[in-house]
View (cartoon, rainbow, N blue to C red):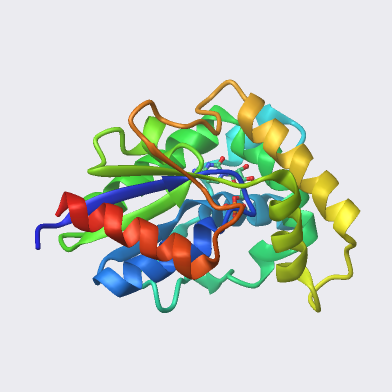
Length: 223
Ligand code: C5P
C-alpha cells in the first residue's frame, strides 16, 4: 500500500495518543507525538530557569534544546540534548506550564519545521498527533481526524491515567484540563481547531478498541 500521512488532532483525554500509537502499529506506519515535543521544550525551559510566563524569554531560548523524537509506535522515544526525557515530560509541573510555552510563535515555528521534516522522512507513512496538525503542520495530509469527547469522559480518562502516579482528584483533573484546553484553543498562533476537511469522531461512548477500529477503517479507505 502507498504511504499515507494521517493527522490526528483533538483536546486531551479523547484517547488521541493511545489511538494514534495503536493505529500506527497495526498498519506498519511511523508515529509522531507532537505534544511530547512541546512538553520536552517546556521541561528544558523549567530545568534551565527560563521564566515560562515571559514570552520574550521563551522565544529567546526556543532554539537552544536539541530535541530528537523517535517514530517507532511500539517505543515512542524523546530525547533532549541526548538524554531520555520521556519520564520528566509527564510531570504535573510540565503539564501546567506547557500551554504558555506552546503559545509562543518562535516555539511553534521551530517545532512545526521539525515535525514536517520528520513526516517527510517517513516513506512508509506516518500518524502525527497534536492540536494543529490538520490546520497548520500538515495541511495536505491524506486523512485528518479530529477526536472529541464530553468533558466528563475526558476528565475520567485523564484521572485514570494519572492514578498511582500522582494523587489528583477528578475535580482537580477536570479543572486543569479545562484550563489547558481554553489556553490551547484561545491562543492566536495555530490554536487547537478542527480543520475544515477533518473527520470528527466523538469518542464519548466508544471503547478504545472501537476508536482504533474506526480510524483504521478510515485510513484503509484512503489507501
Ligand atoms: O498532547 P499533550 O497533552 O501531551 O500536549 C501537551 C501540550 O502541548 C498541549 O496542551 C498544547 O499546549 C501543546 N501542543 C500544541 N500543539 C501540538 C501538540 C501539543 O500546542 N501540535
